[in-house]
View 1: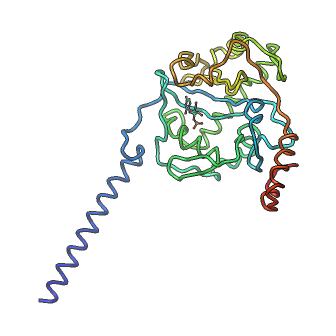
View 2 (view 1 turned 90 degrees about the vertical axis):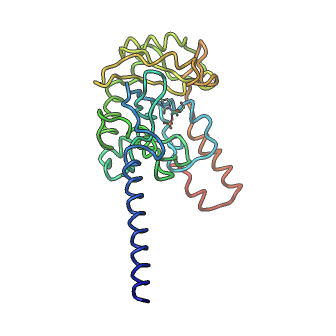
View 3 (view 1 turned 45 degrees about the vertical axis):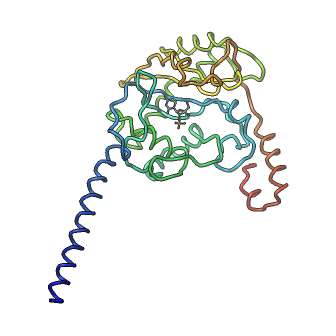
Length: 283
Ligand code: U2P
Protein backbone atom coordinates (compact mmCIF):
# COMPACT_ATOMS: atom_id res chain seq x y z
CA UNK A 1 0.00 0.00 0.00
CA UNK A 2 2.73 2.38 1.12
CA UNK A 3 4.62 1.69 -2.15
CA UNK A 4 1.54 2.35 -4.28
CA UNK A 5 0.92 5.68 -2.48
CA UNK A 6 4.55 6.73 -2.97
CA UNK A 7 4.38 5.83 -6.64
CA UNK A 8 1.17 7.84 -7.05
CA UNK A 9 2.75 10.87 -5.30
CA UNK A 10 5.86 10.61 -7.50
CA UNK A 11 3.70 10.41 -10.62
CA UNK A 12 1.72 13.47 -9.51
CA UNK A 13 4.95 15.40 -8.87
CA UNK A 14 6.31 14.46 -12.28
CA UNK A 15 3.06 15.59 -13.87
CA UNK A 16 3.34 18.97 -12.12
CA UNK A 17 7.00 19.35 -13.18
CA UNK A 18 6.12 18.37 -16.76
CA UNK A 19 3.24 20.91 -16.81
CA UNK A 20 5.57 23.64 -15.53
CA UNK A 21 8.14 22.82 -18.20
CA UNK A 22 5.49 22.96 -20.93
CA UNK A 23 4.11 26.30 -19.67
CA UNK A 24 7.58 27.82 -19.27
CA UNK A 25 8.57 26.59 -22.73
CA UNK A 26 5.48 28.14 -24.23
CA UNK A 27 6.14 31.50 -22.57
CA UNK A 28 9.75 31.31 -23.66
CA UNK A 29 8.85 30.98 -27.29
CA UNK A 30 6.48 33.96 -27.09
CA UNK A 31 9.04 36.18 -25.40
CA UNK A 32 11.66 35.21 -27.97
CA UNK A 33 9.59 37.07 -30.54
CA UNK A 34 8.37 40.02 -28.48
CA UNK A 35 8.34 41.30 -24.92
CA UNK A 36 5.90 39.27 -22.78
CA UNK A 37 2.30 40.26 -23.21
CA UNK A 38 2.90 42.14 -26.44
CA UNK A 39 2.22 41.18 -30.03
CA UNK A 40 5.27 40.82 -32.31
CA UNK A 41 5.94 44.28 -33.70
CA UNK A 42 5.44 44.99 -37.39
CA UNK A 43 8.32 45.84 -39.68
CA UNK A 44 9.57 49.43 -39.49
CA UNK A 45 9.28 51.97 -42.36
CA UNK A 46 12.51 53.97 -42.23
CA UNK A 47 15.63 54.70 -40.17
CA UNK A 48 16.44 57.86 -38.24
CA UNK A 49 20.09 58.40 -37.39
CA UNK A 50 19.82 60.52 -34.29
CA UNK A 51 22.82 62.72 -33.48
CA UNK A 52 23.43 64.68 -30.30
CA UNK A 53 25.07 68.09 -29.98
CA UNK A 54 27.49 67.81 -26.97
CA UNK A 55 27.76 71.60 -26.68
CA UNK A 56 24.14 71.75 -25.56
CA UNK A 57 23.95 68.55 -23.53
CA UNK A 58 27.29 68.91 -21.73
CA UNK A 59 26.45 72.44 -20.58
CA UNK A 60 23.97 70.84 -18.15
CA UNK A 61 26.45 68.31 -16.75
CA UNK A 62 26.64 68.69 -12.99
CA UNK A 63 29.07 65.96 -12.11
CA UNK A 64 31.66 63.90 -13.95
CA UNK A 65 32.63 60.25 -14.21
CA UNK A 66 34.94 58.25 -16.46
CA UNK A 67 32.13 57.00 -18.71
CA UNK A 68 30.70 60.45 -19.49
CA UNK A 69 31.98 61.84 -22.82
CA UNK A 70 31.29 65.38 -21.57
CA UNK A 71 34.05 64.97 -18.98
CA UNK A 72 36.96 64.37 -21.34
CA UNK A 73 39.73 66.95 -21.31
CA UNK A 74 39.28 67.49 -25.07
CA UNK A 75 35.80 68.87 -25.74
CA UNK A 76 33.64 66.97 -28.21
CA UNK A 77 33.32 69.44 -31.07
CA UNK A 78 31.32 67.21 -33.36
CA UNK A 79 27.86 65.70 -33.37
CA UNK A 80 27.94 62.32 -31.63
CA UNK A 81 25.61 59.41 -32.28
CA UNK A 82 22.56 58.87 -30.09
CA UNK A 83 21.19 55.91 -32.01
CA UNK A 84 20.02 54.43 -35.28
CA UNK A 85 16.27 54.15 -34.86
CA UNK A 86 13.83 52.12 -36.95
CA UNK A 87 10.66 54.25 -37.12
CA UNK A 88 7.13 54.12 -38.52
CA UNK A 89 5.72 56.67 -40.96
CA UNK A 90 2.96 57.54 -38.48
CA UNK A 91 5.48 59.04 -36.03
CA UNK A 92 5.65 56.04 -33.68
CA UNK A 93 8.35 53.40 -33.42
CA UNK A 94 8.84 49.80 -32.34
CA UNK A 95 11.03 49.02 -29.33
CA UNK A 96 12.61 45.97 -27.68
CA UNK A 97 11.68 43.51 -30.41
CA UNK A 98 13.80 40.47 -29.65
CA UNK A 99 15.07 38.83 -26.52
CA UNK A 100 18.75 39.15 -27.23
CA UNK A 101 21.28 40.63 -24.88
CA UNK A 102 24.00 43.11 -25.75
CA UNK A 103 27.48 41.53 -25.85
CA UNK A 104 30.43 43.91 -25.84
CA UNK A 105 32.68 41.16 -27.22
CA UNK A 106 30.77 41.20 -30.50
CA UNK A 107 31.68 44.82 -31.22
CA UNK A 108 35.17 45.02 -29.73
CA UNK A 109 36.77 45.94 -33.10
CA UNK A 110 34.59 49.08 -33.12
CA UNK A 111 35.30 50.11 -29.52
CA UNK A 112 37.67 53.02 -30.27
CA UNK A 113 35.29 54.53 -32.79
CA UNK A 114 32.31 54.05 -30.52
CA UNK A 115 34.16 55.76 -27.66
CA UNK A 116 34.95 58.73 -29.85
CA UNK A 117 31.77 59.10 -31.89
CA UNK A 118 29.09 57.30 -29.87
CA UNK A 119 29.87 58.15 -26.22
CA UNK A 120 27.28 58.41 -23.51
CA UNK A 121 26.91 62.04 -22.45
CA UNK A 122 25.63 61.09 -19.00
CA UNK A 123 27.04 59.25 -15.98
CA UNK A 124 24.10 57.03 -15.14
CA UNK A 125 23.84 53.63 -16.78
CA UNK A 126 20.99 53.13 -19.24
CA UNK A 127 17.96 50.92 -18.93
CA UNK A 128 17.93 47.86 -21.16
CA UNK A 129 14.96 45.84 -22.36
CA UNK A 130 15.64 42.54 -20.68
CA UNK A 131 18.69 42.79 -18.48
CA UNK A 132 17.95 45.83 -16.33
CA UNK A 133 20.82 48.29 -16.70
CA UNK A 134 23.81 48.52 -18.99
CA UNK A 135 26.00 50.82 -21.04
CA UNK A 136 24.43 53.29 -23.49
CA UNK A 137 25.28 50.97 -26.39
CA UNK A 138 23.36 48.10 -24.75
CA UNK A 139 20.31 50.34 -24.44
CA UNK A 140 20.42 51.38 -28.10
CA UNK A 141 20.97 47.83 -29.38
CA UNK A 142 18.28 46.21 -27.26
CA UNK A 143 15.69 48.96 -27.70
CA UNK A 144 16.24 49.91 -31.35
CA UNK A 145 18.74 47.51 -32.94
CA UNK A 146 16.55 44.48 -32.29
CA UNK A 147 13.72 46.16 -34.24
CA UNK A 148 15.84 46.83 -37.34
CA UNK A 149 15.19 43.46 -39.05
CA UNK A 150 15.16 42.53 -41.87
CA UNK A 151 17.76 45.22 -42.75
CA UNK A 152 19.93 44.55 -39.70
CA UNK A 153 20.48 40.98 -38.55
CA UNK A 154 22.84 41.29 -35.60
CA UNK A 155 24.60 43.57 -33.15
CA UNK A 156 27.83 44.00 -35.09
CA UNK A 157 25.90 44.91 -38.24
CA UNK A 158 23.78 47.43 -36.28
CA UNK A 159 26.75 49.37 -34.93
CA UNK A 160 28.74 49.09 -38.17
CA UNK A 161 25.82 50.42 -40.21
CA UNK A 162 25.23 53.35 -37.85
CA UNK A 163 28.92 54.32 -37.94
CA UNK A 164 29.03 53.97 -41.75
CA UNK A 165 26.05 56.31 -42.17
CA UNK A 166 27.53 58.72 -39.64
CA UNK A 167 30.84 58.96 -41.54
CA UNK A 168 29.22 59.05 -44.97
CA UNK A 169 26.95 61.95 -43.99
CA UNK A 170 29.07 64.13 -41.73
CA UNK A 171 26.62 66.67 -40.32
CA UNK A 172 29.31 68.72 -38.56
CA UNK A 173 31.07 69.21 -41.93
CA UNK A 174 27.81 69.82 -43.80
CA UNK A 175 26.99 72.67 -41.43
CA UNK A 176 30.42 74.28 -41.46
CA UNK A 177 30.44 73.96 -45.28
CA UNK A 178 27.25 76.03 -45.24
CA UNK A 179 28.82 78.67 -42.97
CA UNK A 180 27.15 77.40 -39.79
CA UNK A 181 29.90 77.17 -37.18
CA UNK A 182 30.13 76.13 -33.57
CA UNK A 183 30.04 79.33 -31.61
CA UNK A 184 28.74 80.59 -28.29
CA UNK A 185 25.98 83.07 -28.76
CA UNK A 186 25.89 83.22 -32.56
CA UNK A 187 22.37 82.63 -33.79
CA UNK A 188 21.42 80.96 -37.04
CA UNK A 189 18.02 80.93 -38.69
CA UNK A 190 16.45 77.48 -38.22
CA UNK A 191 15.43 77.56 -41.89
CA UNK A 192 19.10 78.11 -42.92
CA UNK A 193 20.24 75.13 -40.85
CA UNK A 194 17.53 72.93 -42.36
CA UNK A 195 18.27 74.13 -45.91
CA UNK A 196 22.01 73.55 -45.47
CA UNK A 197 21.41 69.93 -44.43
CA UNK A 198 18.77 69.42 -47.13
CA UNK A 199 21.18 70.65 -49.78
CA UNK A 200 24.17 68.59 -48.60
CA UNK A 201 22.32 65.45 -47.50
CA UNK A 202 19.36 65.25 -49.84
CA UNK A 203 16.62 65.02 -47.24
CA UNK A 204 15.04 67.20 -44.61
CA UNK A 205 16.40 66.66 -41.07
CA UNK A 206 14.50 66.75 -37.81
CA UNK A 207 15.96 69.13 -35.25
CA UNK A 208 15.28 69.05 -31.52
CA UNK A 209 16.23 72.01 -29.32
CA UNK A 210 16.76 72.76 -25.68
CA UNK A 211 16.26 76.39 -24.68
CA UNK A 212 17.05 77.57 -28.23
CA UNK A 213 20.19 75.43 -28.74
CA UNK A 214 20.39 72.38 -30.98
CA UNK A 215 20.17 69.25 -28.83
CA UNK A 216 19.64 66.62 -31.52
CA UNK A 217 19.68 66.50 -35.28
CA UNK A 218 18.20 63.49 -37.06
CA UNK A 219 18.89 62.28 -40.58
CA UNK A 220 16.46 59.83 -42.13
CA UNK A 221 17.00 56.94 -44.54
CA UNK A 222 14.80 54.52 -46.40
CA UNK A 223 15.38 50.80 -46.01
CA UNK A 224 17.90 50.85 -48.86
CA UNK A 225 19.77 53.46 -46.79
CA UNK A 226 19.07 56.27 -49.25
CA UNK A 227 18.50 59.74 -47.74
CA UNK A 228 14.85 60.72 -47.30
CA UNK A 229 12.92 63.41 -45.44
CA UNK A 230 12.35 62.96 -41.73
CA UNK A 231 8.81 63.50 -40.46
CA UNK A 232 8.51 67.21 -39.81
CA UNK A 233 4.97 66.83 -38.49
CA UNK A 234 6.34 65.09 -35.40
CA UNK A 235 7.66 68.46 -34.25
CA UNK A 236 4.11 69.61 -33.67
CA UNK A 237 2.09 66.43 -33.13
CA UNK A 238 3.35 65.77 -29.64
CA UNK A 239 6.15 63.25 -30.22
CA UNK A 240 8.59 66.12 -29.73
CA UNK A 241 7.35 68.11 -26.76
CA UNK A 242 6.98 71.89 -26.67
CA UNK A 243 10.18 72.31 -24.67
CA UNK A 244 12.09 70.48 -27.42
CA UNK A 245 10.63 72.72 -30.09
CA UNK A 246 13.12 74.95 -31.93
CA UNK A 247 12.60 78.72 -32.14
CA UNK A 248 13.20 80.63 -35.38
CA UNK A 249 16.81 81.35 -34.43
CA UNK A 250 19.00 78.68 -32.86
CA UNK A 251 22.55 78.30 -31.56
CA UNK A 252 25.23 75.59 -31.68
CA UNK A 253 27.11 76.38 -28.47
CA UNK A 254 30.52 75.22 -27.24
CA UNK A 255 31.18 73.90 -23.75
CA UNK A 256 34.27 73.98 -21.61
CA UNK A 257 35.17 70.56 -20.16
CA UNK A 258 37.84 72.02 -17.87
CA UNK A 259 35.30 74.20 -16.14
CA UNK A 260 33.15 71.11 -15.84
CA UNK A 261 35.91 68.97 -14.35
CA UNK A 262 36.90 71.74 -11.93
CA UNK A 263 33.39 72.39 -10.71
CA UNK A 264 32.97 68.66 -10.25
CA UNK A 265 36.17 68.47 -8.25
CA UNK A 266 34.82 71.17 -5.97
CA UNK A 267 31.57 69.33 -5.45
CA UNK A 268 33.37 66.05 -4.90
CA UNK A 269 35.86 67.40 -2.35
CA UNK A 270 32.92 68.53 -0.25
CA UNK A 271 32.14 64.85 0.16
CA UNK A 272 35.79 64.12 0.85
CA UNK A 273 35.40 60.68 -0.63
CA UNK A 274 38.66 59.39 -2.08
CA UNK A 275 37.01 56.77 -4.24
CA UNK A 276 34.56 59.21 -5.77
CA UNK A 277 37.29 61.75 -6.55
CA UNK A 278 39.44 59.04 -8.08
CA UNK A 279 36.64 58.29 -10.52
CA UNK A 280 36.63 61.85 -11.92
CA UNK A 281 38.07 62.04 -15.38
CA UNK A 282 40.54 64.95 -15.38
CA UNK A 283 43.19 63.76 -17.86
O1 U2P B 1 12.64 61.73 -28.02
C1 U2P B 1 12.73 61.28 -26.70
C2 U2P B 1 13.17 59.85 -26.66
O2 U2P B 1 12.23 59.04 -27.39
C3 U2P B 1 12.93 57.99 -28.04
N1 U2P B 1 12.70 58.04 -29.49
C4 U2P B 1 12.41 59.19 -30.13
C5 U2P B 1 12.19 59.20 -31.49
C6 U2P B 1 12.25 58.01 -32.21
O3 U2P B 1 12.10 57.97 -33.43
N2 U2P B 1 12.55 56.86 -31.54
C7 U2P B 1 12.78 56.85 -30.18
O4 U2P B 1 13.06 55.81 -29.60
C8 U2P B 1 14.39 58.13 -27.73
O5 U2P B 1 14.69 57.22 -26.74
P1 U2P B 1 16.10 56.52 -26.45
O6 U2P B 1 16.63 55.83 -27.64
O7 U2P B 1 16.98 57.63 -26.01
O8 U2P B 1 15.72 55.59 -25.37
C9 U2P B 1 14.51 59.58 -27.31
O9 U2P B 1 15.56 59.86 -26.46
